[in-house]
Image 1 (cartoon, rainbow, N blue to C red):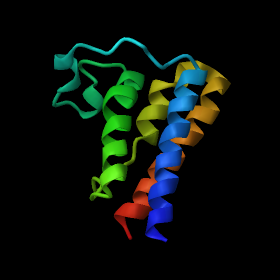
Image 2 (spheres, rainbow, N blue to C red; image 1 turned 60 degrees about the vertical axis):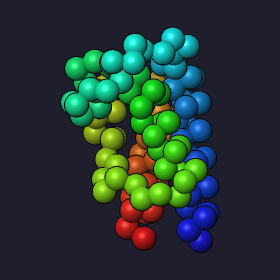
Image 3 (cartoon, rainbow, N blue to C red; image 1 turned 90 degrees about the vertical axis):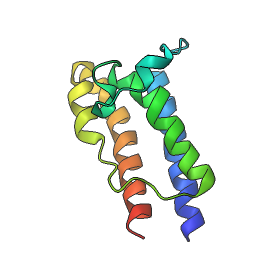
Amino acid sequence: MIDAHWQSLADALLTLEMQLRDVGLWSTKRPEPGRLVSQSPFCVDTLEFEQWLQWVFIPRMTLFVNQRSHLPAECNILPMAEESFAELGRGRLTLLSAIAEVDRLASLLVHR
């Protein structure tokens, strides 16, 4: 059962990537390395939220999934996503749904 949860989280991360691509928020240009090591939550002082998702969050979560390692105690990124993607209007709904699913699945694995 636990392996199924890990696989579901891996699938949800891929869905999140696809949704970012679909709304045009996936970049082919990697930010400068120094911008990826901010001490601020979500690297808000150095990256846009979608950049943080692409270059920090998804790779880190994928590593956790691949190693079946302990996830951070809380993966509640939906509120930040709702604020960051408000300007997308209705186009953000599927993206927010993908983020909510990542939050939900990560929470299941933390509280197992």
